Length: 309
Image (cartoon, rainbow, N blue to C red; front, side, top):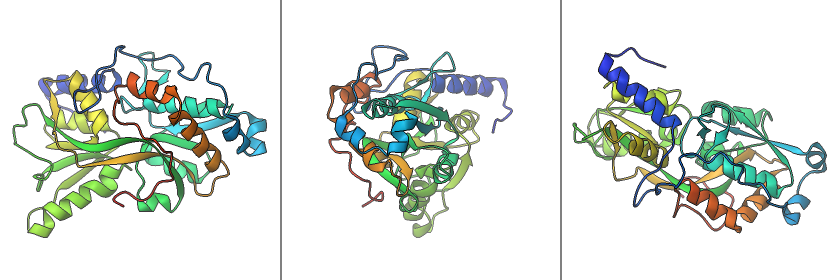
């Protein structure tokens, strides 16, 4: 959803939208600035299949030779389009390509809206997703989820934080969230209950929008007071637009995120083995480093447990 704004606000909104399809990173305690602006090369070139992972593949999948992954390609630096508007890039496409390579399969990337991914998996329209998805109890009822790196949820505010907001001081404020994300489903309602309504204060008003671009556009036009989203993506954008917005230093939550498949998928064990094989290889560190994700790696591709446990 787009809005009509005065010229100054519209210019800021356009800058924000551009930032989300541009490239960069964040600093110090956050991801570091990568050496290149874009990494459009296929990181999986030359990566041989892992025999142990291949052995776990269903024969029908081996015969088909292709595996499909669903992603919402609108969230730098994890999952987005290169400047050519046709090449999926970011940490998640890199990981998906490496997973496919470890399985000896070709990869098909399907660009879909985030809130349609779970229904798509349930309807067997895609084999798996690698799109920075948190393991809520509700998702685990219908999905198999496997850890593959760490991320967190943060809050962005206008540059200078004119309302002097903090993560735990959002009562009565309008906070933008992307439809279908854990920010919408879990973290904002939990924060509102704990910090606000249980203390007799006005609730946080969650404003659900189709994408983080829409939320940041409304933030720039002062229709929102803040935006809650993936910490890495917000920090990436703030790095590119330091005069427009900033990210509050405290995170709402830090958590491991997951690759997901339909519940009971015959591919789950093979995908898990492939992820572990990637994690154990130098390519995992390379993928993390080239998107500025130093310190966000994990050691074990474990099956997920619900967030907060």
